[in-house]
Image (tube, rainbow, N blue to C red; front, side):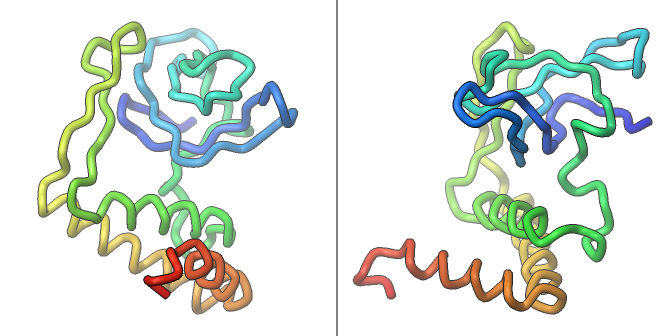
Length: 157
Protein backbone atom coordinates (compact mmCIF):
# COMPACT_ATOMS: atom_id res chain seq x y z
CA UNK A 1 0.00 0.00 0.00
CA UNK A 2 1.34 3.39 -1.00
CA UNK A 3 1.80 5.92 1.80
CA UNK A 4 0.90 9.52 1.00
CA UNK A 5 1.86 12.80 2.64
CA UNK A 6 0.60 16.38 2.40
CA UNK A 7 1.96 18.02 -0.74
CA UNK A 8 2.03 14.86 -2.88
CA UNK A 9 0.87 15.31 -6.47
CA UNK A 10 -1.60 12.62 -7.49
CA UNK A 11 -4.05 11.52 -10.14
CA UNK A 12 -7.54 10.63 -8.92
CA UNK A 13 -10.76 9.24 -10.36
CA UNK A 14 -13.72 11.35 -9.28
CA UNK A 15 -17.39 11.96 -10.00
CA UNK A 16 -17.93 15.10 -12.09
CA UNK A 17 -21.23 16.95 -11.85
CA UNK A 18 -21.20 17.38 -15.65
CA UNK A 19 -19.32 14.45 -17.18
CA UNK A 20 -19.69 11.42 -14.91
CA UNK A 21 -16.52 9.58 -13.90
CA UNK A 22 -13.38 11.57 -14.72
CA UNK A 23 -9.64 11.31 -14.14
CA UNK A 24 -7.94 14.40 -12.74
CA UNK A 25 -4.16 14.75 -12.99
CA UNK A 26 -1.94 16.99 -10.87
CA UNK A 27 -4.13 17.23 -7.77
CA UNK A 28 -2.56 18.04 -4.39
CA UNK A 29 -2.87 16.04 -1.20
CA UNK A 30 -3.81 18.70 1.35
CA UNK A 31 -3.90 16.66 4.52
CA UNK A 32 -3.50 13.04 5.66
CA UNK A 33 -5.19 11.38 8.64
CA UNK A 34 -4.78 7.92 10.11
CA UNK A 35 -7.63 5.55 9.20
CA UNK A 36 -8.34 1.91 9.91
CA UNK A 37 -9.05 0.88 6.33
CA UNK A 38 -6.05 1.47 4.00
CA UNK A 39 -4.25 3.09 7.01
CA UNK A 40 -4.85 6.64 5.72
CA UNK A 41 -7.57 9.10 4.78
CA UNK A 42 -6.54 11.75 2.26
CA UNK A 43 -7.93 15.22 1.73
CA UNK A 44 -7.36 16.25 -1.88
CA UNK A 45 -7.77 19.48 -3.88
CA UNK A 46 -10.32 18.73 -6.60
CA UNK A 47 -11.51 20.32 -9.85
CA UNK A 48 -14.44 22.75 -9.53
CA UNK A 49 -16.89 20.24 -11.09
CA UNK A 50 -16.24 17.54 -8.45
CA UNK A 51 -19.55 16.28 -7.04
CA UNK A 52 -18.00 16.10 -3.55
CA UNK A 53 -16.62 19.65 -3.47
CA UNK A 54 -13.23 21.19 -4.11
CA UNK A 55 -11.71 19.51 -1.04
CA UNK A 56 -12.48 15.80 -1.03
CA UNK A 57 -11.78 13.27 1.72
CA UNK A 58 -11.16 9.74 0.50
CA UNK A 59 -9.37 6.52 1.28
CA UNK A 60 -6.30 5.96 -0.92
CA UNK A 61 -7.62 2.93 -2.80
CA UNK A 62 -5.00 2.02 -5.44
CA UNK A 63 -7.66 1.70 -8.17
CA UNK A 64 -8.59 5.38 -7.79
CA UNK A 65 -5.51 7.29 -6.61
CA UNK A 66 -1.89 7.20 -7.74
CA UNK A 67 1.24 9.34 -7.36
CA UNK A 68 1.85 11.23 -10.61
CA UNK A 69 5.57 10.38 -10.66
CA UNK A 70 5.26 6.91 -9.06
CA UNK A 71 5.72 4.72 -12.11
CA UNK A 72 9.05 4.63 -13.87
CA UNK A 73 8.91 7.12 -16.74
CA UNK A 74 9.41 4.26 -19.20
CA UNK A 75 6.09 2.66 -18.17
CA UNK A 76 3.88 5.75 -18.25
CA UNK A 77 1.09 6.18 -20.77
CA UNK A 78 1.26 9.03 -23.30
CA UNK A 79 -1.43 10.95 -21.38
CA UNK A 80 0.47 10.63 -18.13
CA UNK A 81 3.75 11.66 -19.79
CA UNK A 82 2.08 14.75 -21.26
CA UNK A 83 0.43 15.68 -17.95
CA UNK A 84 3.75 15.34 -16.13
CA UNK A 85 5.70 17.22 -18.82
CA UNK A 86 3.15 20.07 -18.86
CA UNK A 87 3.17 20.35 -15.07
CA UNK A 88 6.95 20.26 -14.70
CA UNK A 89 7.36 22.80 -17.53
CA UNK A 90 4.88 25.15 -15.87
CA UNK A 91 6.72 24.76 -12.55
CA UNK A 92 10.08 25.50 -14.21
CA UNK A 93 9.14 28.99 -15.41
CA UNK A 94 10.03 32.19 -13.62
CA UNK A 95 7.36 33.19 -11.14
CA UNK A 96 6.13 29.61 -10.66
CA UNK A 97 4.57 28.91 -7.29
CA UNK A 98 3.67 25.91 -5.16
CA UNK A 99 0.33 25.70 -3.37
CA UNK A 100 0.30 24.81 0.32
CA UNK A 101 -2.39 24.60 2.99
CA UNK A 102 -0.61 25.66 6.24
CA UNK A 103 -3.83 25.35 8.26
CA UNK A 104 -4.84 22.05 6.64
CA UNK A 105 -8.02 21.37 4.72
CA UNK A 106 -10.04 23.89 6.74
CA UNK A 107 -7.72 26.80 5.93
CA UNK A 108 -7.06 28.73 2.78
CA UNK A 109 -4.35 27.87 0.31
CA UNK A 110 -1.13 29.87 0.26
CA UNK A 111 1.15 30.29 -2.75
CA UNK A 112 4.92 30.20 -2.28
CA UNK A 113 7.51 31.10 -4.93
CA UNK A 114 9.77 28.27 -6.08
CA UNK A 115 13.51 28.77 -5.76
CA UNK A 116 15.76 28.83 -8.83
CA UNK A 117 17.05 25.38 -7.86
CA UNK A 118 13.51 23.96 -7.63
CA UNK A 119 12.67 25.43 -11.06
CA UNK A 120 15.84 23.85 -12.55
CA UNK A 121 14.84 20.48 -11.05
CA UNK A 122 11.39 20.79 -12.65
CA UNK A 123 12.97 21.69 -16.01
CA UNK A 124 15.18 18.58 -15.85
CA UNK A 125 12.15 16.39 -15.13
CA UNK A 126 10.12 18.01 -17.93
CA UNK A 127 12.90 17.25 -20.42
CA UNK A 128 12.92 13.61 -19.34
CA UNK A 129 9.15 13.29 -19.86
CA UNK A 130 9.28 15.00 -23.26
CA UNK A 131 12.15 12.79 -24.42
CA UNK A 132 10.27 9.66 -23.33
CA UNK A 133 7.12 10.80 -25.13
CA UNK A 134 9.03 11.65 -28.32
CA UNK A 135 11.01 8.39 -28.34
CA UNK A 136 8.18 5.97 -27.60
CA UNK A 137 5.00 7.71 -28.72
CA UNK A 138 5.97 9.81 -31.77
CA UNK A 139 2.37 10.29 -32.97
CA UNK A 140 1.20 11.53 -29.56
CA UNK A 141 4.31 13.70 -29.28
CA UNK A 142 3.59 15.35 -32.65
CA UNK A 143 -0.05 15.89 -31.73
CA UNK A 144 1.01 17.47 -28.41
CA UNK A 145 3.47 19.79 -30.20
CA UNK A 146 0.86 20.74 -32.81
CA UNK A 147 -1.69 21.60 -30.11
CA UNK A 148 0.91 23.63 -28.21
CA UNK A 149 1.82 25.65 -31.32
CA UNK A 150 -1.83 26.21 -32.21
CA UNK A 151 -2.46 27.63 -28.73
CA UNK A 152 0.23 30.31 -29.20
CA UNK A 153 -0.79 33.82 -30.20
CA UNK A 154 -0.40 34.46 -33.94
CA UNK A 155 2.60 36.76 -33.44
CA UNK A 156 4.46 34.03 -31.50
CA UNK A 157 4.24 31.29 -34.15
